[in-house]
Image 1 (tube, helix red, strand yellow):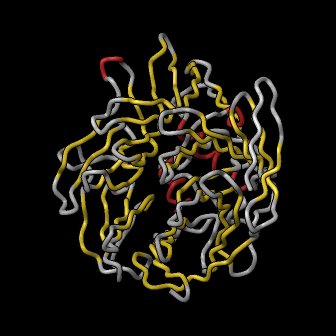
Image 2 (cartoon, helix red, strand yellow):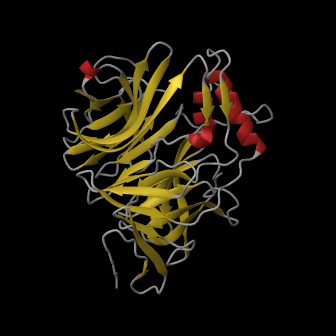
Length: 411
C-alpha cells in the first residue's frame, strides 16, 4: 500500500511497500516535490531475456551499407524504419528483413534533411526526421512523399536552435535541444532545454532549461560541470509525463506533468564508473578535432562516465534506463542490462538481454516481441563527431555496421 505524507515547511520521509514484493523504497518531499529514493537493488531482482536471431542486414557480407543507424521505429504492420544519421535517409524493411526501399535523402529540398538525429511517427501518420541543425522536423509520408516541415520557436527573436530529441505527447511534441544566441563581442549564450510545442512549432511549455555562457577567446570546457539534456536523455510516458536526465554525475531523473508542473524526482544509489584510458584517449582526440579552430582552448575531461546514458519508454510502458555499467562486466552470454522503473519511478527490475554483441559499442532498442541490435554504434558516433579521427590508434578498423533482428525466445 502506498502512503504519502506531506506537511508545509517540513519534509517527511516515509516507506513505500510495493505490492507483492516486500521491497522498500523511500519517499521524501523536498521543496514541495516528491522524491522517489529507490534502493540499490530492484524490487523483483534481475531477469534475463533469451533472444533468438531472426535475420541480419549490412556487415561485410551484406548488400546494404549503413553510415550510422541512430534510431528506429516499427509500424503497426511490423514494417521497420531505420534512421541513418550519416546518410540522411530512412532504410525500410519488412518484418522478415526484406529491404522495401529508402525514404528521404540528404539535401535541403522537400522531404530532404541533413544529419537527422531522431525518427518518430507524427500524429498525422507521417514520419518525422528531427534535423539537428538548423533544428526542424522534416515530414515524409510512408510512400516517400514530402509532407512539409515543422520549424520551432520564434525566428524573429534571433539566435538559432540545434535539436537532439523529439517525442509525441498527444497532439504536441516534446523536444530537447540547445538554443544558441550570440553574446558580443566574442561569445555565445547556450541554453540546454526541454519543451513542449504545438504541431505548428510554437512553444507551449518549458520543462527545464540550463544556461551557460561561452567566451571563445578564453574557451574552457569542463565536462564535470555540464548540465545538459543531451541526446536520448528525455522520454515521454504513455500518460504524457516527461522524464529528463539532465544531471551528468547523478542518477537523477526529473519527472514533469504535461503542463510543466514538477511531478517527482527519481533517484537510486549508483557508483560512478571510472573511464578507461582508451575512452579518455578517444574523447581527447574528438575534442582536439572539434576545438582546433579556437587557439588556446582548454578542456577538462571527466574521469567517469555519465551515470545515465539514455532514457527510453519500453514496449511495456515502463521507463528503461541505460547506465554507464549496462554493457560492462556483464555475466557470460549477457549483452546488456537495463534498469527498469514503473511510470511512478519505482525501481522494479533489471532486465538483461542474452545474445552475442559488445555492450560497450553496440546499441539495442526493444520492440514489442523482440529487439533490434545495431553493431558498432559507438564507433560510428565517435567517428562522426571527430571527422573520422575518433578511434584510438591501436583499434582495429571498425567492421561495417550490421542491423540484427531478434525475437524473444518462446514467442
